Length: 390
Image (cartoon, rainbow, N blue to C red):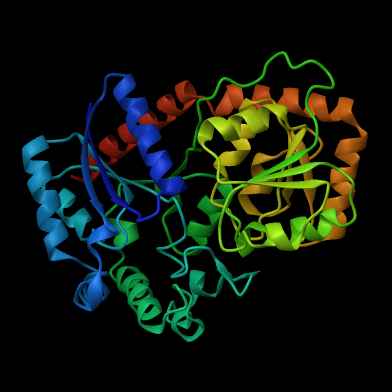
């Protein structure tokens, strides 16, 4: 199959960029022909460039022409769009439709139903734009705390909602969880077009860990407000359990403000270093307070036979089975988190069994082999849907 991957890279690589690369390598390893159409935001510097982006963010004729050129050269069987924001825009769909090439769009975040992309405002869950006017985001400066930026993104959401873009132009969407799928359905997306396909990871895992080797808790992620860092540190004031924190971000300064013999801040680590930490930790803690669209770190922990303590919220509560592959706690409640962490620490045998369960779930759902099968099934569905529409 000839597949054209389309992606607008971020200036600072994040989870979406990692998934994009992983799926590309996965398909190439399976001898599929994968071509790339990539742009990045590095050229958006200076006032003039930023103004152009603002006024073209809903529909870019230049990007439509770019994709038409790529399609004419490559003649793909399918186009898989990972991210079109902010430079490519949904105009690229029209290039595909003109060439009669099926379209698959991965819903990596909530940008096309929430200008802030997180369904979160002022540290709290916010779903007002899911069914209400996206221009509410302008009042609250939901996009980068900017009025003009929020207006531009809200205008994009409103424009394509009115044009019925999501109902008529995309053949299949990939949602990462059932929870995310439901949110997009609530926003008016056609449920029959949204297929749930989780992310995957490929790491060696820890199959034969001897009792007692794994010890303490681990946090891996961006040190930002939405990740529940304040809740995590508040919980640890009540605990005497070793905690290692891997990551960087705007709240990194808390590493100097919250000195404790139980907490070690590791800073930003390489993937190999993170995997080593996961192999040594008794359990992972994920106290996020926003609707994580997936949480790749969870299945990375699963692959290492490491259970996870998570906020009972959105996709996290869906992926982690309470009492089987980890534990749930009330989001934003440090006392409840401390209670769950203490239980894991005090019950090493049960914790180890949860880790074994987690590794089994990984092998059943989140390996590259499983993901390849699911991804190809989505592609075939999109191709058949386009034949029917034609």
